[in-house]
Amino acid sequence: MRSTIDAVRRANVEMIIVGQQYTTRLAESGHYLAIGRSMERVAREKGVTLIDRFASTRTLIAARGKEDMFSEDGMSFNDFGYRCMAEQVARSIVEGLRAGSY
Image 1 (cartoon, helix red, strand yellow):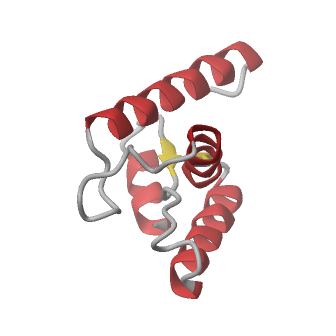
Image 2: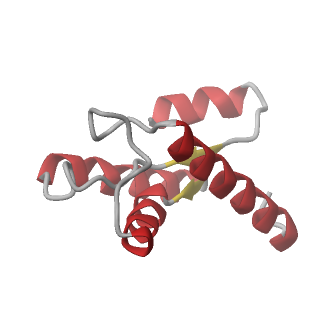
């Protein structure tokens, strides 16, 4: 991830990172959670905005009372899930622009 961030910066391209999503299937996986913590740490070290998809996905599932945003494998988004993610990313970009973060 560090080398990718460095390469993107050398190309003079703005970037944000969208973190991993929450699924009950992976919520207890130590390895999966460690990957998320590593992403957060590297984004912080490199000064790159990380959109916390894990927290927002978990909140949406709790609010809706069901995991209807995933395909049959229980991990990949379906159309509804991708729409939710796109709306979250767009909202985060607008909030960042208003705050002068980008």
